[in-house]
Length: 435
Image (cartoon, rainbow, N blue to C red):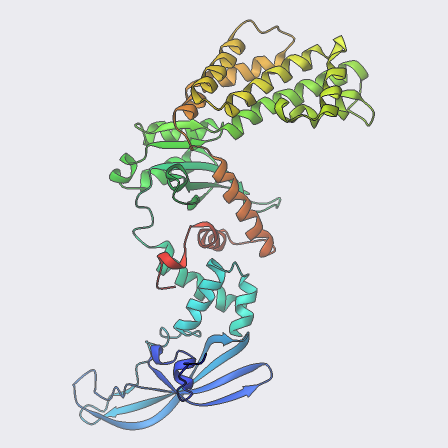
């Protein structure tokens, strides 16, 4: 810093009071907080009723929580002058709305600090309230209202959405009340390779009605712009998409398709276990010991795992499990195939093989075949639309789980939805200069 030029210390500029229409007149540093005495810059001495000039009457003080410096809570003690009109005797006080909204307890700069802490730094609301030296309810109501105004209610937030993902999410683990919500995800950035997925909205309940109602509330132009909807195997999402977005292509993502095969494999393994041994799997039982290995892709098995699988299927009594495992591995191979055309052909072959000719003993494969046949178009549509998967929706579900753990649980769904949108709504400071 050889060429640095220092100016006289200015407490007003350092604490950002000039942007609030205030000027610092003094400070008091205490072990647990800092208090800044301030005055309003604009005199505001003209009557709002008759237009006459007023004369000073007295002063009052207004206290606001401000941006903490060094994690030390900072309090603004604003001296507000009151005037009396010389014409109509009306009494008013200086306008402080530049510093904070009427009856607010936190300055506008403090609100921005709390909002950035929630959105960017992923702080808990308790930590924000501690930094502002206000109660949890005060910080929560003010910061969420500011986030709703600046970010969530932004009319441009839903623009450019062409690929949508829909999934369910458990927002609380209690015995009372509905525990599930429907989450709607914007997968357009993932498909275009421009960024991560983002949360568009969250609706109470997990049903066809919940998703259909949300779609119906969007304008017609927005709905016509949706090209693809990625979803799991729940038929309610499929029906709602067909009714509200007739031109959109539903895609059943690989994660849930492979999980259907994995569930069929587990059900078959447990059934054969019961038939052979008369009890659930225990340590030392071959089928139980290989339960994790059976869910691993054949191309990822180690030599030891290969030997375990070969030894397991060398027993004739495990033939049904071997058949189900073979179908499961073919499904995995279809999605891992380097050529999408070959992958689609393999998956179509699996669906065709399960549609007819499956022995009656293989009840799990017959059930899987009925499901895949019913959703064949949705399953095969994935291979025609690269990067269209509900996997990012599952990733956002993971972020919401982290949010719920950070807050030690939520009791108010409205607060949870607002916090979830701020947490996973894709808001970035460079795209929102007001932050």
